Length: 141
Image (cartoon, rainbow, N blue to C red; front, side):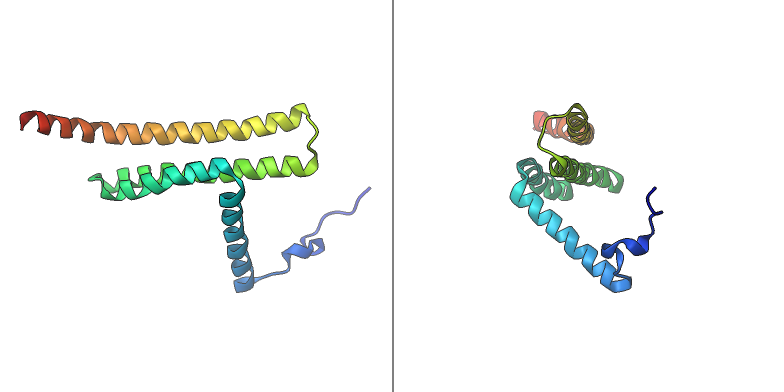
């Protein structure tokens, strides 16, 4: 029977206070850099975000709608990072095909797809009235 786990046994959990926060920030930055360099799906979604996030700032929408537009784009990036981490962990275990490994990767992919659908739905629902008003004004002119 194995020993009961204690956090004191983990050599990676020694940092406390500001040192821990600094190391966490460095690790987060490294994760973002690696995602940009190595994950094509993340780069594609980051490109989409680089267009949609500035657009969300220039649209005349309510603060709540702005948060929904901005948040739905950022959610896609978050879910893609989580999906990539699941895939990396599975590949670390084995490159061998296994039903459970494939299922975990498919779950991650489905989560990204749902986040993208939510983003599309949010943007469509908020932009349709704006576009509709714009066309109505132009038809009068």
